[in-house]
Length: 389
Length: 177
Image (cartoon, rainbow over all chains, first blue to last red; front, side, top):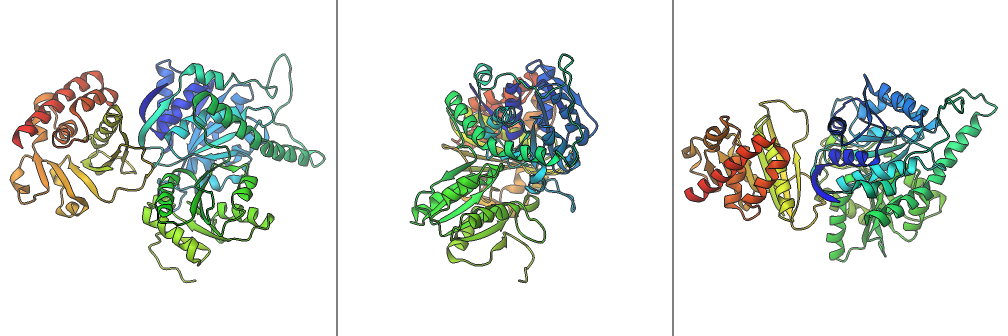
């Protein structure tokens, strides 16, 4: 184990190196580019032995990863924003084909207006494409989830691709101290990829085929069931990771000061750290507040949420997303858990950080005040124009 | 927590300086973040870079609102409005060949960093000279850690010269103060 001062992207590249992917398909897009730059350097200086394929678009990047995965290779690619959207067709091919690709997505706003800064509208708009989606908080979790991502995706019970989401710039381009595990421990955690779902001259089979109405629904059900089963694999993977590396992340969600909390803020990604500091500050004033970080959006942690929110007065969902014409998508998902479980509590949505807008400590204090005083359900934070409602 | 903002132009090495400072903090067993002003990169355009340094892990990634130090790599980027962003005991460091222009401001320390850089690397790249100056006026980072950290972000030949710049600037600034 060594300590290094790395950006989120560089940390993720180190995690990919330790996972020893056999094929990496790359196409640059800001703010993802430095991940594939670092990986190219690693291949060039032989610290990573991998087939690096520089393709002509994101659509091709994922198509290439699908092809390599169909040969039984461990594969990696990365993207962001419009690049992810350009991949949209292939996202479904990868998950439907049950190819356990790991892809890093640098969360970035979507056009128009054109903007390269961070928000989560790119990946949240792709929740239904059948990929496991995890959102990480810092550079260490980025590196660690590159390794955990393969462990989850390649589990025979799961066989589903994993998208690891890093907030653009605030995480991808921020340098901080990261522990880089040694290769021996990484190999102990992540054995080589083995699958029966591959092309083989010895055992020829048809992959990526057509299925009509007679069987198609069964395929979709099995895809859904694999995603539900992945919840257990995600928990087990984190436990195994903690045993080997001495740190874990709690699986699908990670709570903070939830004990006897009346007011809970639900977060995603890199804003969680600042929210935790505000929870500490308010707790010192005797306010009964807590925080729940959702790590996995798919599979959705409904049991975890129901258990954590049982005796709470109000919750707020903070997300860098808006589903135009309704509310934030994470909020919709959380409210469904509350309705299904008959929980009696107030829920609020805080839409913040769109197009890279800063989310300040004072913004977060105001969110907790809103939970306590009540008010409008869907709130835009730091908006510069008036809202008539 | 110590909060630092760098002002430079694309190509002057403001973010490299922030990374070296951040890595030096790691060598000093402290925690730090280093991040650039986000967005498209263009040579010559004004850019900013930031450091947060603390004795505990830093989990607040929000923008820096008030600074312990503001460091200008280029005096053409200076505006007295920026001084409002300094904490009460904060300090601005400015690279300038005309210190008299800034002598009215008690919160400004001037240094002719270009001259030191020109002498050693024959280019007016002032980032490491400004780091040396910072080490000499602040207890928050040491010269030796900055020199060690230079190896991480600069090529071997360039690191050796920049270590000289760091030392010369550090000593020069100790003297003039």
